[in-house]
Length: 550
Image 1 (cartoon, rainbow, N blue to C red):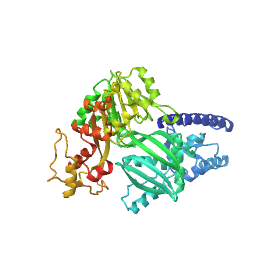
Image 2: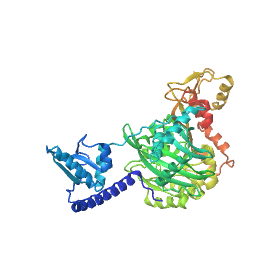
Image 3: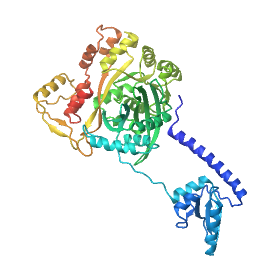
Image 4: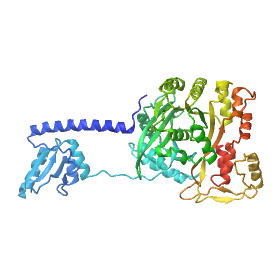
């Protein structure tokens, strides 16, 4: 499927407009010769010609298709641009009127395109400024109604762009457009939580979905789920940035539902230093990816930041002496210096087939978008033991569950035991707003629960004093209505050392997630839940948020 970016579309539109203008000017030139009028090509000067005010009314200019002109010099002759639609009788009236004042008048034939540009200067279109979208709190029907009214009032040709720009301004990761019996519900996912922002009239559905489908090359009448992709340049205080969007559409009872995933592309953000990874975990990542071979697996649900972390690793490895290739469905971030290959798995292509092909290109580092089957898993692992560093994602809830599932896919195999070097499970939890958060002392049952979770922390982690600890709760403020601001990364990292490799070699028969996790914790692994509780004790998030996500 060929998808044009907004930039390519804009270039095509510019070319079409230039050709149309050329045809318009050629036709006007011929018509001027027939009418015996001087022809004036306003291209290049239509934005710089001096406008003469109060000669004729704006209403007359519109009705008679005429514009007063002053093209340099100190001539006392009044000059007008006229079009092929200007009545000849009006030109005679105007000539007689100026002759009665002993003044000269001259007419030049201009194209309709030139006339429209000049009229936009004489009578600029009214620019409508719409209110920014606000996120309603639970039960806040007034805000919901206000945003709904705004979205319903935005002109049809602007409503889709307005929705995208507002979602980007709010830092939303997803836009959910959902058909319901009596209208359309718009929800935004901000900091990992869904918030209703508007309920729209049904006619807005056709406008928004029509714009979305045409730009992403999708069909509004399809009976099967569809995936698409588009880009948009968003103006901001620093100029502009590119917003990548991944589109998922699925037919429902009342029409097509759509989810737009937003990726605010900024290559400088793809940096391990900016992810807030704890020192021990960061050292483990650096140590593993510094080796020329092996496999790193990222696991976690959709929206947990796996792609951002993998891209940050790729950025750290992206040096002139390495060749990096990615296989993605679809390509979410375009990174200079990396060969990125889109794989349309919905169209019958597979990661395994593409992986076998790209290995012939002698890459140093390969990223596989997702390991979904045993063929891809075996091919990726074979690549990782033959001199390639392989990065990939995998669907599992934890590192131990991922390792157990991987063994199910590839079987117990001593040859593969040294292939997987690091498994990372990741979640994103909302960060408390430091300016408004409120401290409190937890009750005894909560303290005991935290003691149980943190009971077997490895020696390299400082164990907090639960007896005298404090926790924090979110407090609403004008800048953060829900008491949260942004998200932080919670990571569980399993370094696959000799003890873990025994499960893959077949030395240990009890290949279950629970037994693998127990061994990993004995080797110093800190679990997702433990990391979450420690983050709550540091005041970075709340226990409620940790339990919601983890």
